[in-house]
Length: 288
Picture 1: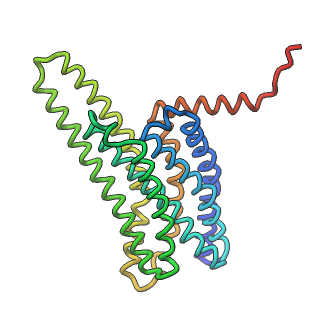
Picture 2 (picture 1 turned 135 degrees about the horizontal axis):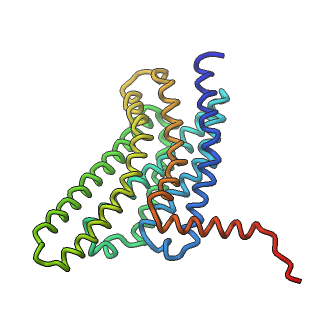
Picture 3 (picture 1 turned 90 degrees about the horizontal axis):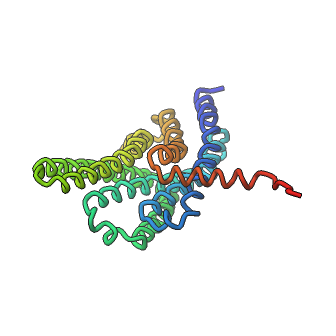
């Protein structure tokens, strides 16, 4: 077995368990949000619901295609992965970015957030993300160089927007914190502001965890995409590229556990969904 075949086998083995994790965990998150009218009516949860759906499709479609591609030399599987697989991962990446922008708007327009960020606007943005992510996959059949370059620019843009959003959120929270210090005379106002700051900090930390996960899983691919775009050969860094793809796909399995860990209302909804599924699975007790 050659070195490249060994790497392909290792990648396939690494992805195998995460397929089931991604499908089961994201299906739970999606179902928990979808069956709750109150959660579906919140713009931030609509983004999260769409993200869970894209991550579910990554586990259901993209990862099996990737595993089959790694274990097979069929060029058609490579083309399907480069278009369908990358498109699904691209949707997840842009939705995580949209989540960071949503958090920035929450802290920046905390009094006018509901007027600025409406459910219809968020729904429109989510549809655009899905459509554009799949539309640009057609560039692959036109020119691979431009496809890789566009993918690198898209990934770099998402990372830059998310990073900018969190830097801005930090500045807003810090400004609020300083404003509290000069309001010592107004005890009631200070108490309200302190509560508001705590909520802002908690919300920021929750989403910042997603950003760190995104950086860890997407940044290696971004670096390699940039190197590919300025390189004359796609055979360079092949081993590193394969493992960066595995890291990218694993992100879809990590996200639902981050939701469960950091978002209390979603955690309660997931528990209710699990209880509902378990109750349905129990045989009915005959009282006669």
